Length: 271
Ligand SMILES: NC(=O)C1=CN([C@@H]2O[C@H](COP(=O)(O)OP(=O)(O)OC[C@H]3O[C@@H](n4cnc5c(N)ncnc54)[C@H](OP(=O)(O)O)[C@@H]3O)[C@@H](O)[C@H]2O)C=CC1
Ligand SMILES: O=C(O)[C@@H]1CCC=N1
Image (cartoon, rainbow, N blue to C red):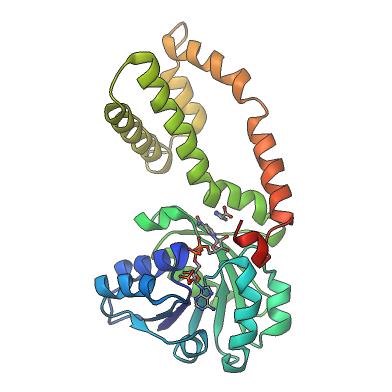
């Protein structure tokens, strides 16, 4: 299978690395291009079997599955640029939430899907959100999801639910990191311990909680019940958290929804 990547920035570069780590070169031919050559050169120096294409057009010509990994404001221009090189049997997959499946299908003659990756795929974990266009039938959907399973847990969602789902799976790592950093910094202030000790404790705790939730069958409530024993210390801490957190995430989701309505122009990409 020949997989092409147009754009090897943060997300495209991550996907190239993730596929290269998870799949032997004998099963996968990767070809990629990037506007500025340095980012791609960093990847090819670590993964020499990743081939360099000179342009998006060449990437498309040399691929069966094409991942479009440019910023929203660049996406429509690149789609127009590669259009003459797209064959009906191509799979064209955009990682931009701003470009709608219907818009892509109206322009492109091939099968299209949209996926929203997450920084967690650096560790071959976390979710890729998947939305398929109308030309993707059951077998073809399974085929693409099978590839995504090599690097993540693919979850199919409705395009209309994308905003809130990607807040959880793709923006979520940053939201969680902000909260965890606050926790560590408060421990430094209140407990007088060094920052690196506080960071290590929070990181290891987070990894352990992740395992309970994903591997040990714990629900959030199970963890809360087992740790916040009646009359204990954790329960007192939770009494502080509840009023402070109430409404915070509603506000966050209202804000991201509002921002996403104005997203998708080159002007906004560079703000
Ligand atoms: N960051 C995240 O966690 C997530 C991001 N996304 C989405 O992914 C998309 C990409 O984001 P991200 O990877 O962070 O952005 P980056 O800016 O890091 O990557 C975009 C890349 O596309 C390259 N590029 C632009 N135009 C062209 C072109 N014509 N031909 C070849 N390469 C081109 C850029 O090259 P150059 O080196 O010249 O800039 C750049 O390397 C966005 O839509 C974002 O919303 C989705 C999920 C999560
Ligand atoms: O913040 C952003 O715009 C991107 C989209 C999803 C995660 N990061």
